[in-house]
Length: 154
Image (cartoon, rainbow, N blue to C red; front, side):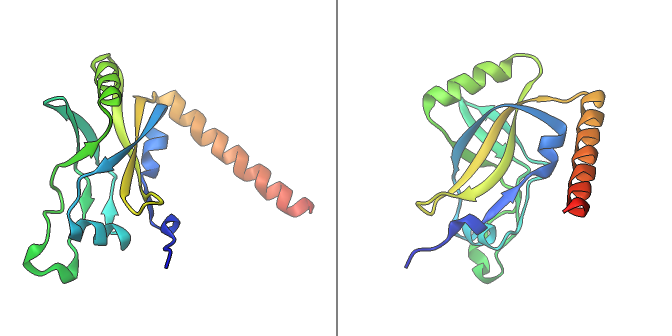
């Protein structure tokens, strides 16, 4: 019996608005069983999550995965720091870029790979300025207006 993992996807929509993505990476996440079950239920908040390096390893903080109700006393801490699993070359590349001014690593989405493992897409990003954000809003409004016009002309 094959499962469709495409429906289990959680995105940090705010990240695209706040940052310009330079490059994206797929990283594994070190999780417990109750965390996996909570992710499958969609009980994740990525709004305040960020990545940082500690001892040449990459961790994600402030990723809120709610407790799984049926896990009894084996439950996890919702705000614990979780290790991200990347290849050594990718870690070195990210560490070098983050040490430069203006770059940060942003967790963008959590999804399940075809193998069934939970993965996190992280992005090497630069923060947008206020005028960049206004430009993004303007483009979205224009696109929405064009879609509305196309709908009525058919």
